[in-house]
Amino acid sequence: MAAPLPEVYGLAWEQTAGRACVVCGKRLTTGAVSRGWLFGRHGAHRLDVEVWCCPKPEVD
Image (cartoon, rainbow, N blue to C red; front, side, top):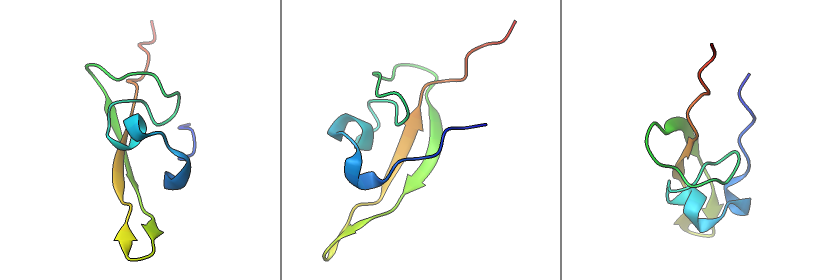
């Protein structure tokens, strides 16, 4: 089961930019997996971002 997504307000800039995993915060390289979109507002400003996570570990 996938970890629940956090609120957009608590994410680091690297996570909102798609450069770090939304779950663990590690830097993303190849094989990143889209976790979907987080939606938020700050007054008139939209804070919607697509978030990414580390690839699933391979199971032997």
